[in-house]
Image (cartoon, rainbow, N blue to C red; front, top):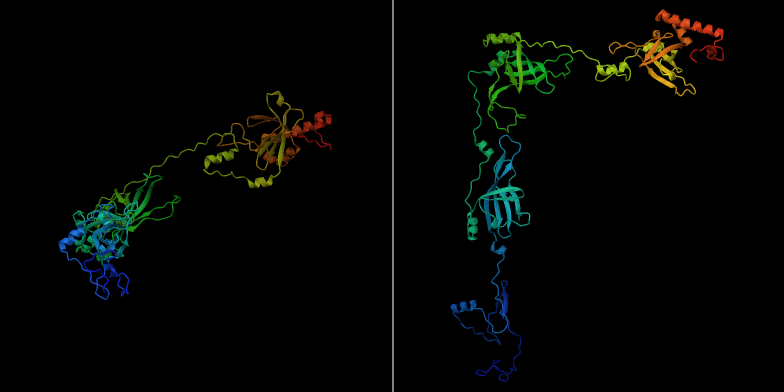
Amino acid sequence: MSSHPVHGLPFLPGNTYRDPTKSIFHRSQTLTYRNGYSRPVLPTVGIGREPITVNQLSQADLDELANKRPTLTYGQVRQAPPSTFIPSYVAFDKKVLRFEGYFKETVPISQDEHYRVRKVSIYYYLEDDTISVVEPPVENSGIPQGTFIKRQRHPKNDNGDHYHWKDLNVGINITLYGRTLRLISCDRFTQDFLESEGIELNLPEEIPPDPYTEIRKEPNRTYTTPPDFDKLKQFLTMDRKVLRFFSLWDDSGSMFGEIRPVIIHYYLVDDTVEVREVHERNDGRDPFPVLMRRQRLPKSVKDLRDTFPKCVLEMSEQEVTEWYTPRDFMLGRHVTILGRKFFLYDCDAYTLDFYQEKLGVQDLTPADVTKPQEEEVTQEIPPYNGYGLLEDSLQNCLTLIPKPPKKDVIKMLENDHKVLRYAAALDSMNPEDKERRFILSYYLSDDTISIFEPQIRNSGIIGGKFLEKSRVTKPGSTMDNPVYYGPDDFTIGSVVEVFRQRFIIKDADRYVLNYMKTHEHQFPCEVLRSLEKHFHAQEGDRELGNPDIQERTGSGGTYDPII
């Protein structure tokens, strides 16, 4: 007996009964997985199973039911299930946008080019929004080419946004890692894709020409030798033949410049020019004879660009239109050589014969360049200001770096420790200076004078050194012809003026009289007589018992006039 209800009875409790013979009670499986997708299980007829009857509907009914949304009287409306989701890596797998472009690379050190135009291909991968840049290799370019930028996402601003295919178009610039790439065209697939997404493409552009490539396309230089000129003949006929010109280089316009004599050599064997300096004795210049080395001199050149490196690159024959020749060197004219003007005033005998025989120039008169005699400037020595010694002060007026005046060494050795001492009084109108006494010492080794004032008790005047050891000039002497005091000027009663102070010689030491008697040929007779008369008078006063003489007599009875 089957387990389904009896035909015609309602499927209600009490109208059914259990089948005592039924032994399988599990629920039949309605869903299964095939190829990774869930699908209903097709019914199979078997033991204890009956086929499921399915209403056969038309395709129109099925479409109507698929688009129909159920409505409920009570409760919330359930959201319709989403449509089938397809990931981007599946939808855009192996779909790549391709743009053709270029960028300009700066070439800082080159004469032929200032920049290079490098062609690149930009690939945009739609599946993960990455970009790669590839430079197609060029044969014998000498540049590492191939993958220029690896496949990766590139930021387009500082906010962290990355480039998207919506940002790409033809005729725009994009910056990748500091390189500005210009997009000029794209392939057919890229054009169809962008147009299908509503992006209007710009017109394609042409890649600009590369300067160096255009130069390489030019034909090679060809050199033709004029038939009427033979360098070998010039070498054989003009070897060791040199034109010699005497000239002046006027450099007085620059700082510390002057007019300098030079010699210009023109070598006929190869039309080269050399400039040599003429050094004079004690001219204060380094002994470098060559001012300009031997070379060809361009007279006129083509109009070169401002970027032509003249200071480091020599001009070739392509830039020079005319070179200097012997006809450009004429006496009495100026010649401009490397921006410097030289005046040609004379030449040697061979150069004169060459111009007369070969070039037919007869008027070659040397120019007179003798300098007018300069007036000697008389050196004026300023008056002596009283500071320091006269000889030391005079050295500051004679040389920039003053030197100490020379000393008589032999005189210093012969008269070492020989001092002539005199007693002097100050010639002054002040009554306080009447009682002051001074000891004037004259040093025979260097003709200097020092003055010492002995201290007197209860005088109110501090004694000590009155004048430092120095040479003293006589009144009325000048800086040009100074006259100094000597031993023959110190007589008893004479007046000595020392720096506007007048001293009267009152007495002398016994050593002064003995020294003058020993060297009487060096002193006038009046000086020796004055001292002998003075000492004879003092000896007579001592015999008569003069108290002043007794006070200046030592304990041993020896007379010392200075004490």
